[in-house]
Length: 100
Image (cartoon, rainbow, N blue to C red; front, side):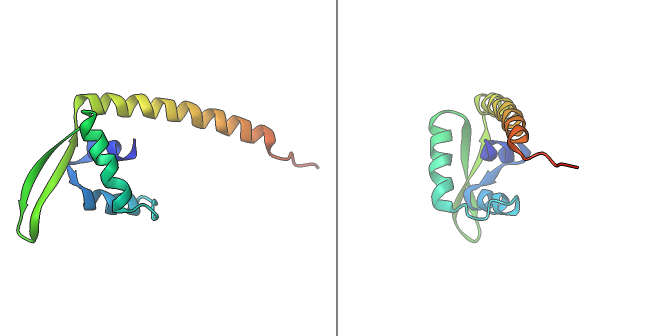
């Protein structure tokens, strides 16, 4: 979901996505975790890719969400928001009440 969200902002290549996720607070995420996600999203038709020549090494594979990926993002985001509301509600019930 987060990879698709970042790709809706702009086209990116793998290492750049790792950097952007780190900047967003996911410090423990590694390229070894991200690349299988990108492969699965591409295999499932949720993202497309294109190779772009680089002056600083091998060509980079840039990714963008497909229409299917955009639909999946919004569907997953709605489910996440509903889950967050449920979790917040249950945690609020479990939190000790202050006494006066």
